Length: 502
Ligand SMILES: Cc1cc2nc3c(=O)[nH]c(=O)nc-3n(C[C@H](O)[C@H](O)[C@H](O)COP(=O)(O)OP(=O)(O)OC[C@H]3O[C@@H](n4cnc5c(N)ncnc54)[C@H](O)[C@@H]3O)c2cc1C
Image (cartoon, rainbow, N blue to C red; front, side):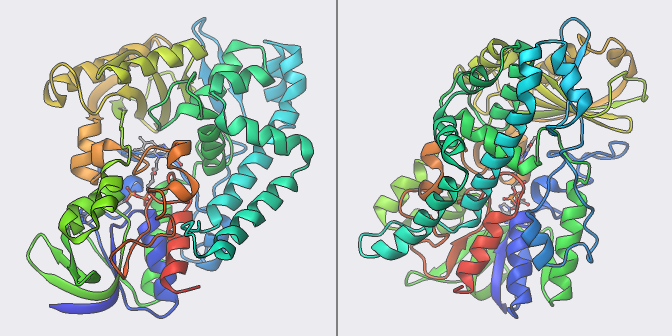
């Protein structure tokens, strides 16, 4: 039995961010990761020989304050420049709509003008609004949420009041626009701005990326702002998650911390409502005064702590966190002659197409005409596939994997005639694989659906939004808490500050 000051469960980017801050503050930190490779959803090298591509999330960028405070550039972090990267909608007539998230990009404005001169004229204002809205969401995520206790009116009110002031600071017009847009559907939001369907659908795709919602679902205005913020625009940045993971581990080690892989935490140890350490699947116990879990809240609280250690009402809330994974990945190892253009490509021809793709998830099915987001890394073509239900109504993921792969390939090949002939091998990751290999309950990549009723002081659940739990010394620091999901590190940074009492 060994002991440290702080144990972090999970070496995803949020766990590593929290670990690096705590180690920098002088704590003896140990990170325990179940997989053989650190990085969580950003981990590299998970696909096997020949597949030299990220298994899950192709890009990602940390908040600039984290990069600065942890000195990550010195530790090897590659800079991410997403606003310049092309986001390309593949169109049914064989053409493309190529966008960048820059309001002054002449090529983007010209591409939009071919569809609508009115939309082209609005593009600079749209980009400026999205940057302002995302900037405000960023300020929200950077602010640890109060628990809204009755007895702490000032402590509850001050952070929220400062966010309202920041919102007011956007100016009257944008303030109202942001408030309205948060609860709007992608369809309503894009209708407000544009008239050309391919443009509205390309933006609508980003609004439903990673969530089990359709383009007509209320609240996808919020997920659009969230995804725009985390990408720094529309497309994935080229930096890649491997660089984030390496830099964070280097920063952790430089401050004396340690990260152990192939170390599955089986239990979080609790004595008289106080955390005492963890027990690994191997039986080894490690003691600590604090445990920060970057695994999802359901897995942490109900799986690792266990209901008997928690108040009944809290257990009920934890059981009610909505986890609804419906994202799959299909990777194609090609001979390189796939014929796809460079950039982040989307198959999202119309808003109605996106909504119909989502319909499958309501009925436990795999979309016949899915929304796809495609990135190519050398000879590997990686397809993000929505929607593929975690719980299938007919069959199971052992029997339906081939259906998923065929639908991904057939859909993309309709836009890239050379694709099928270039494929040498296929590897797919189903929502069940996300649960079994990455520990994501129900395959939910954000550790809990990113929806308005699970946001702010309701994330992960009402009244428990300040990273603490009913178990003293046990905090949550992954994507399932306020500041997450997606890649930014905000949840890990906020949790570390709470753990340090700052
Ligand atoms: C296909 C796909 C596309 C995505 N696209 C985007 C996007 O466009 N934009 C965006 O911002 N985000 C996107 N995301 C989401 C984003 O990648 C995640 O929200 C983010 O990476 C989560 O980071 P994390 O550090 O909070 O958790 P994770 O990366 O999930 O890390 C948690 C870690 O905990 C470990 N763990 C779990 N249980 C245990 C245990 N019992 N013992 C030890 N270790 C444990 C896991 O193995 C994992 O390493 C995407 C995700 C996927 C899968």
